[in-house]
Image 1 (cartoon, rainbow, N blue to C red):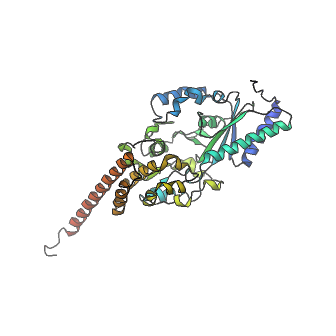
Image 2: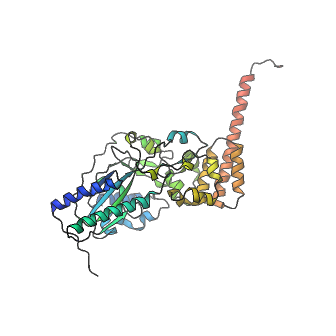
Image 3: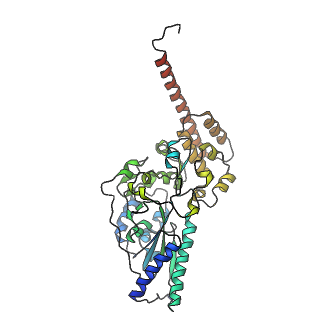
Amino acid sequence: MPTHSPAQLTTTQLQELALKIKEWGKALGFAQIGICDTDLSKEEAKLQTWLDKGYHGEMAYMETHGMMRARPHELHPGTQRVISARMDYLPPDAGFATNLSDPNLAYISRYAGGRDYHKMIRNRLKKLGQQIEAELDSLGLAKPNFRPFVDSAPILERPLADKAGLGWTGKHSLLLNHQAGSWFFLGELLIDLALPVDVPIKEECNTCVACIKSCPTNAIVEPYVVDGRRCISYLTIELQGAIPEEFRQQIGNRIYGCDDCQLVCPVNSRAPLTQEHDFHTRDPLKHPELLTLFSWNEAEFLSYTEGSAIRRIGHKRWLRNIAVALGNAPHSEKIINALTHRRNSDEVDEMVIEHIDWALDQQLNHKQQTNRKTQRVIRAVTKGLPRDA
């Protein structure tokens, strides 16, 4: 089988092509395009240590391909450069405070309120590759060998984006950008052209540790290192089975993901709103009541989350997560009735029932605490009054 021969371009042609790629990328809706080589050898030891400590939890795919994750040229043979793309997703009227401050509402990570980004960004990266292909064809040169990736392959996208100058890695391990904070998706186009590379951005977190202090479950175990097993995003999305009891109260009303470390980051104060309407939060998910979401049967869940990243957890884990949030909500007979009704339905399994039972116990505890507080208030008010008062 003949091997592919990369197109031969002059240094000037490569420089001109790199500029065009960035223009085409913006026309396709990307906020920024950066280019880097494939050398991530400095990341390999850190990746292996992270895996050795078991911080990936049940995410076995993180270790399946070994160090290929840090070697894009092995993932897609012939790759010389990685074109890294950024697409902003912060929706208008995000309502962070409204949702997080009301324990009867559900909080959903703001990246997941709209359309699933995977296919959308991959298709646009493919179009970018096709434009490069057409440009080389117009020069009478061989087609480039390219392949797009969006959070779907063993590749270290953040270190690559860091190296491509799209931002710097923050202490929460997310990429930070002066203009966009961390509210953006990343995608990569691996290609066999020796394009000029961009210069990385200097880290500017300095002494700030706001993200570390804000994590409800102390998942950021040290600067730049996240123990996935403690992260609320992992617990509510990746974890297949029961959520460990030690984390259930800290989860609060977060039923899909968590944005706390981003919310406190001062760099995010400058983040722009997305230009992609598909990333706007759907109406049923804007300020959703926990009881409403908990009442959805599987058909309704699939309908309301069609085309959304939320669908990936399935109806049972959806119910599991909401049951935990209902257990953390203030005492309510409506909540107790809803939990009891759902427990007796045919759409739950033992895993969901475990979380419902925990939530019912929590609701009982809340009721007892409320009663004790009421009794203390009554005693305080009546103290000193005449006996016949």
